[in-house]
Length: 70
Image (cartoon, rainbow, N blue to C red; front, side, top):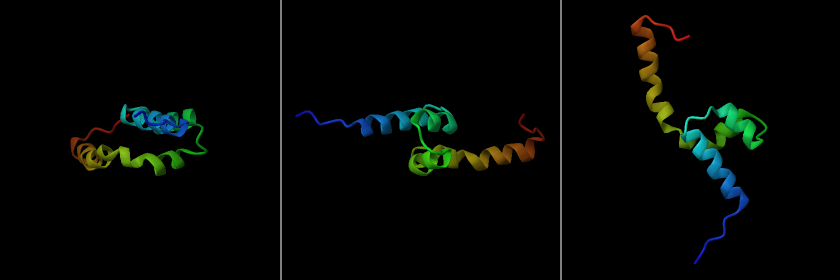
């Protein structure tokens, strides 16, 4: 049996895969036609758990390496 694929499903897959692939949320939001980046992040942040996991490591590296990112 072949499942029906809705346009919504394709759009959701596009946004999800783009974010997982490293495309910046602002770019994905604009391409998807969302009203704001906040909307995109509110609805798709669940696909970016590595962002939370690496955030404290990035901050620690900045604070203790003496190097400020450009």
